[in-house]
Structure formats: C-alpha cells, structure tokens
Image 1: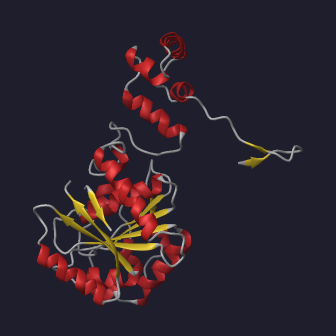
Image 2 (image 1 turned 90 degrees about the vertical axis):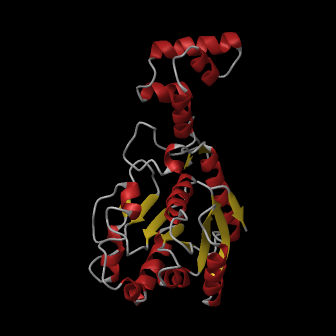
Image 3 (image 1 turned 180 degrees about the horizontal axis):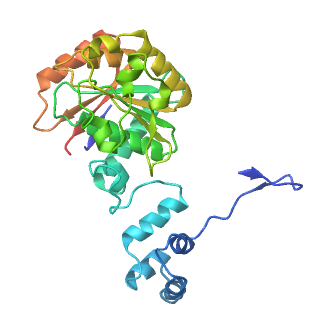
Amino acid sequence: MSEFHTSQAGQGTGLATVAKPRSIGDILVANGRLSTEDLQRILAQSREDKVNFGEAAIALKLLTQDDIDFALSKQFDYSYLSPTDSSLSPSLVAAYKPFSRVGENLRAVRSQLMLRWFNGDPSRKILSIVSAGSGDGKSFIAANLAIVFAQQGERTLLIDGDLRTTQDTGQQAQFKLGRNAGLSGILAGRAGMDVAQQVPGLPGLSVITAGAVPPNPQELLGRPAFGQLLMAASTEFDVVLIDTPNGGDYADAEVIAARAGAGLLVTRVNQSRIPQASQFSRRLQDGGVSLVGSVFNDA
C-alpha cells in the first residue's frame, strides 16, 4: 500500500503540574525487559561513549531494537504489539510493524484523510472503505487504517459491513474477536451498540463484526436501523470506518457508502480492472457519495 491520491492543575500554586515522563530504562525495568544492574551498565556506557541510551544498550547486546521501540511506544503513549504477541492476525501490519514502510504509508493516508474529511466537522466522522472488485485488499486497508487512527488517539470504530462473509473470516478473524450478534444482529433489532468489542492492546479501537450471515443483507442495510447506528456511533467515536463487500458483485457497498456519505476507493496493482473501478466510482458519485480519495494497494 503506497499511494494516496487525493494535565492536572496544581493545588495552591495556580500552575499546572505535569508528571515527569519515565525514562526508557525505567520503563524497560518495570516491564521486566531489563535488570537494574544492566540499566546502570548501559547508562555508564552511554556517558562514556557520548551516545544515546538505545545505541549503548544495543552495542552492549543488552537490548534489541524491539525493546527500544517498545519503551518509546510507552513513553509517547503509542500502542503497538510485540512480534511475539499472537493475539491478532499478522496481517494487521500497523499493530505489529508500525515503523515499517507499510506503516509509514498508512500514516500518510491517515494524514490526508484528516485534512480532507476528518477535519472536526461533526458531520464528517464516517467513511466507507470500498473497492470495485474482490481481492483489492479493501479489508486490509480498513483494518490497518482503523489501527493508525486509534494510535493517534482518535476514538475509532471499525464496522464490518460485509454481511456476506462468515464469522471465521472478515474483521472478526483479523482481530480474533469473539462471536456475537454483530452488525446483522443490530440491523435485525436483536442487539445494540454494546456488541462493539474493544481490541486488546490497542486502546481506543473498537470493532463491530459482521455477525451471522443473513439471507437479506442488502435489505438489512437499507433499513433505518443502519442510519440510526451510524448516528449513534458518530456521537461516541471520533472516526468510524466501514468495511464493505466488493462493489462489482453486490450493491451493498453503494448502500453503505450512501449512508456514510463518503468513500475511500481501494485499487490493487495487477488486480483491479480500471474500467470496472471507473464505472463503480461514477455510480457512487451519481448516488451522492463524496469520494475522498483512492488508495493504490501494492501490499
């Protein structure tokens, strides 16, 4: 995925007091990644060689770059998962490899979306992630974008709007979430916003899975309940992203995008057919959907 087109108050003093941030060494000791003895060795080496803590630690082979990145993430309140953590799917690159090229590209897309759509306007909190064909990586982009928005501190909700996928696939599988009524249950009147599940290890990110596969997905999405859900979500979250089924085979994506009011089009190298994508884009725009931009996915 590489291109995007498009404090507490002090008492008695009248001054704000800010807690002193913990050092990298203190964080690593507290998390069992470093002993106090080795911490002192690193600090002494850092002073002697006049290099930063991380360089000295790696030179002494007492810490790895993963340890340093972990401490920095805690220091700057930036959540991501260790490569040894298997609680989520490895496809969630933004969670496992946030400092990779793909992670950087995802943050670049996030920045453009913050400028073009999520600009503080209460009416611009919802965005559908769409594609004309299958295999374009739309669900990959939706999931990873949701993660980078949460990492920025935005209260983020990812809704799996593909009611044609089974509970063993889709966003439920990527985030390894438990089964519940999901979106289909909400639209059928059997559940409410409480089905949104918080993602362990990624504060600020919640997911509503697709739920059970219904016999009438398009009709369910056309019900007032979907619009009511989006209105409720926009009051509780800063960013709401909706994953969709491919627009070439189903009209569901057009219904979802029209409800959201905006869409981000995903295409993929050696996969997407330009005429199909162009035709789908025109249909969305004819339906009043604002196409915020497009992502060229080469992942």
